[in-house]
Image 1 (cartoon, helix red, strand yellow):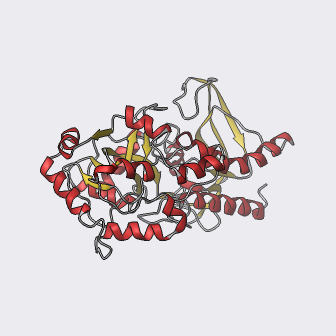
Image 2: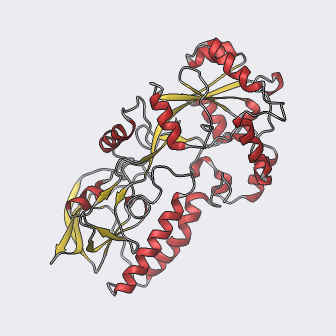
Image 3: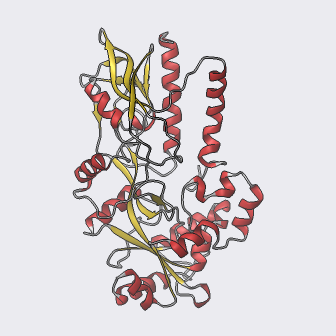
Length: 409
């Protein structure tokens, strides 16, 4: 799998395959979907989880991901031969994020952005614990070091993940270059830890317009309309003739975290970093740009990326940031941004939820991020971008097969 990859159709394209099966089963009376139902507890009979109960919320018509009304109108309960938790992590809960992030990284950053909608609140992890489930590696958080504030936020503090290529210069808040291998989109957890250890809560990406045009991108279906809409010619045109347009242009013009200048001095002033420090770091980086024998690890990474031929269209040719013909200079302020939870409900190889004693909690299963993408933390302390969906699909399939084999459905 190449280091940078994206699903054709983005999120909707991925979900579509499974949604068709669900809606088909629903049309045949095999599936019932209950929207606006909030589970508040698990029901047990004779030590076996046999269902759920909770509250029915008032009807609402709100945009995808936006906070919804919390008014409660009724109680409900549901019974089943097996209960599967597939409710995600904790990234949308400010209280849990602050507690777990502080445990893991020593302090909580100023200006943290939120990459998760409010319903990713970790509530079912707490409910599973109350029912006897073991929660493993709860404070293993895989948050982005490189988020920017959404110019059209859907929820409060909405952060967007920057998926920049390897050529930009990554600096801490004082203007000092991050050490190897902390290049854009290389070691996510390592970069978060470095930023927090620096005493600051943000960092900067510095580049010129040529690098921005070729390499700068952001995640999200709305920000990648050609791929989301499956328009191959538009995608090809963007690779062969990249330009600063669309969402990138809007963020560059309206984004609070984007600054542009024609000189290092003006850029340093906009970034609130010492001009001498910024000049020194850019000059040190640029001195290696045309050295084919350079031992600079970042230029080695650029060369390696360009060896994979599809990435040659997405990674800029090695060049100087201060090349007069490649300007103006652009700096992007990066914030710590919530995203994945690497720990969660501990499960066995069949996806059954385990208790503190290691026994299966009969009738209860978990899949995806709520189970740490499998077993309560299959990734360990770190993970690579793009490896999470696979864990969700695999654990979901495993749980489904396990339930069928057990005769619970």
